[in-house]
Every structure is written in structure tokens, then in C-alpha cells.
Image 1 (cartoon, helix red, strand yellow):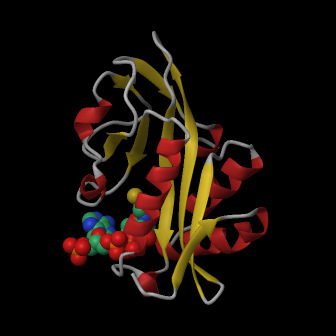
Image 2 (image 1 turned 90 degrees about the vertical axis):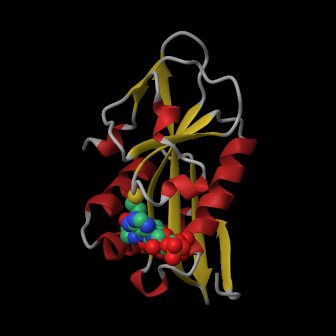
Length: 166
Ligand SMILES: CC(C)(COP(=O)(O)OP(=O)(O)OC[C@H]1O[C@@H](n2cnc3c(N)ncnc32)[C@H](O)[C@@H]1OP(=O)(O)O)[C@@H](O)C(=O)NCCC(=O)NCCS
């Protein structure tokens, strides 16, 4: 990662720039809208940004997932995440994931789920195997999870924030 890039927690005033960044990275407005709704609906857990000279060039979002079933589960989701096209493949995404997972682990979450690139997230410990026993609105090779803390119940029905369905 470029030396001058710094990571910090996002604040409310960063939201418009974060939405623009998501729109640019994905080339469409859907993910920016999800970020906006997660914050609007009070469904966000953690938002980190990467900055270069006070310009937001990377962002990662985490949110809580409600788990219904036997046993107490503390589950979170990762997404959306984006790095500005001019700065992709320089390590910013990896730094954001590493820093984000560290924070979510410290908060006591057992697992983080992601629906994303099947060739990218496994390098950070995510695997399809970790989703076994979980009933979710999605599945397949893009649906992965990583265990951060022990104690995850073996069976649960995952309920994502409404922001993903509006
Ligand atoms: C995916 C994304 C967040 C990765 O961020 P990044 O800062 O470019 O990633 P890093 O620099 O940490 O890692 C780069 C590596 O990831 C790989 N990678 C990036 N995007 C990938 C993808 N879509 N599928 C598989 N591998 C990918 C690169 O090929 C590179 O591999 P290498 O280390 O073997 O050269 C960024 O490319 C992005 O914003 N893409 C558009 C939006 C998006 O797809 N978001 C994620 C949705 S799940």
C-alpha cells in the first residue's frame, strides 16, 4: 500500500464521498445506495475509509446480521467494499479487510459473512465451508464466511438488514 494512505473510522460527514466512491468503483449506483440505507436505517456496524491527501480512495462496510436458531450467535456481514479504480491492486482493499476484521473480532463477533469475489476473499480466510448450516438469502461459491471467535452455533437462519432489499 502507498505510504501516504491512512485508514480511519468513517464519520457521518464522509457519507456523500463514500457513496460517490462506491458508485465509481462498481460503475453503478446500487452499492452506494446500500451504504446510504445502512446508515439511514441505523443498520451499520463499522465503516472504515482509506484516505490519500484527505481524499477518500477506499471504503469497507460491516453490518450486523440477525441469526435465528438454537444458541446465541453474533454474526456480521462485510460489504459493500470499494477502492477507487485509480488505486486498485495496490493493497488498499487488503488493508481495509485486515483492519476491519480486527475491529469486528475485538467486538466479539464470531463470524463475518461476505457475498463477493470467490477468488479474492479466500486470501483473507473466507471460505464457503464456514457457511455450512447457515440458511441465507444467497448461497453458492460467492457466499463465504470467516470465523473470528469461537462459539458459533452450527445452525442458524441469517436475516440481513433491510438495506439490502430496498
Ligand atoms: C475488489 C476490490 C475492493 C479489491 O481492492 P484492491 O485494493 O484492488 O485489492 P488489493 O490491492 O488488496 O488486492 C489486489 C489483488 O486482488 C485481486 N482482485 C481484485 N479484484 C478481484 C476480483 N474481482 N476477483 C478476484 N481477484 C481480484 C487482484 O487481482 C490482485 O491480485 P494479486 O495480489 O494476485 O495481484 C477493488 O478491486 C474494487 O473496489 N473493485 C470494484 C468493486 C468491487 O468489486 N468490490 C467488491 C465487491 S465483492
